[in-house]
Length: 125
Image 1 (cartoon, rainbow, N blue to C red):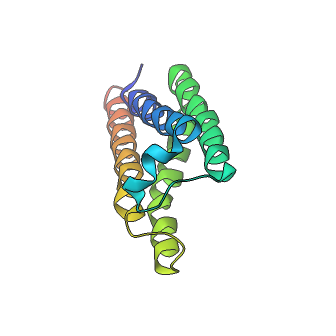
Image 2 (cartoon, rainbow, N blue to C red):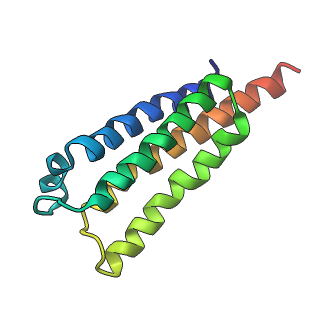
């Protein structure tokens, strides 16, 4: 497995853990995010979609789909922009901005790995 694939592969496990938490025990995260108990189905629906996306990451990493790795860089880096806007609008609590740094840092890790991988391939040709 290439270095870029490993970054996406490992990130898929974070996504799986988060999605399973949202699906099975969403009230475990609610106090950490500054909310009271969650009884809405939407949080479990988000967990379901996140689990599906985690499997996409996992399979793409195992198959070495480089174009998908680039796509994850753009989408994960954009999360902090959206979360900041949602906080600014008063729709989310501020704690979502530091949490979105996990996605941003993961995106930068993958971008760095893609750069190193591309450079290594260019030097070896």
